[in-house]
Length: 348
Image 1 (cartoon, rainbow, N blue to C red):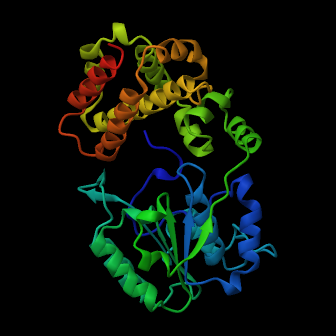
Image 2 (cartoon, helix red, strand yellow; image 1 turned 45 degrees about the vertical axis):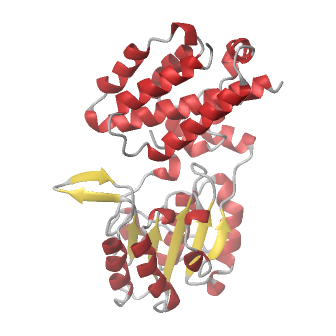
């Protein structure tokens, strides 16, 4: 499962102005008060799930608005705002790592060069509404090398009143030539109180467990609050807590029980849960408290007495390598079963 500002699509236009998140109001007010001094390219950075995409979309909406308020925010009522709200604004483009094939939307690993070339051609066309043009690239680090090079040429010679908003979870993976041509904006993270209040406003009755699972990223926490996801996670976590009774084949069968197009996501969940569980094991071994699995602290401490720290660290490194490959495993079930067998071996 992905959450928050992780989702993506390559499209002609998209809704530009969702409601700003409470913890973003201050930075948005500051940026919008200096709109006349904006560079042609902004790079919005920060961890996944804190609302970077919404921040960028709010800025895009303000740029496109034909009657912004005194605070610089989009009015929500003009023709441009209505077009943007309906996903039909001709002066807005959003590029993301999805492709549409025979009306089927498919997640792809990279933003391909043809998507960026189409974007640069669009950038050269006169604005339909006679105002600003805005392009969002989300997440920008998913451009392949050829795509990044194609964008670089446009960033070096930008068209008048055309703005590029790049959103990146991992800005270190962006070519330095791209990053250096953008003004970098660090998306704010909410305080714990802000995150809890927002999640409760979204209907999450008990936000603390999902916030812990999401490393306190509220949009990701909201996605993780899905009851079916939590039920599946709980089943696997309970299995991790009793490695001596681990039923590898039965758990592996749960991967294949999912529809084929969801098996990679289920494997990704298993890898994430194992990563979090192993981090908590290392924390309790070091005398600290668990970060994600607080309710199972007793089981973690019991296991922590029987695991060799070096073996645990090596296994965690194995999980991180698998996480990097999770988008294209040959057999999700086989990968999950291998990881479970190796996990069980940590305890003799």
